Length: 103
Image (cartoon, rainbow, N blue to C red):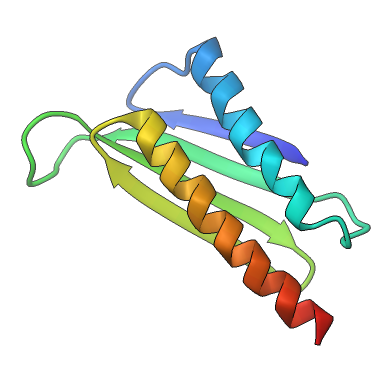
């Protein structure tokens, strides 16, 4: 799976880039039946206008699969927690997608 990462309002460190690529790449096992290349677009950001005090991190992933785009987003106080939330939600969405394709 090809992963494209965009960072908004902060610098993307090599460690964070590696973590995002690892988390999103693990989703490949849920779509082995897709024979075309799959692309994932991931955006991570610090939200500047939020009702909570302190930094609120935002993570969003859009993955193009045949017939639709599978999308997830999360807002957390920790960027790694936001990435994990997105990954977990995408995992559930991929399971539903796979069930729909099997019918």
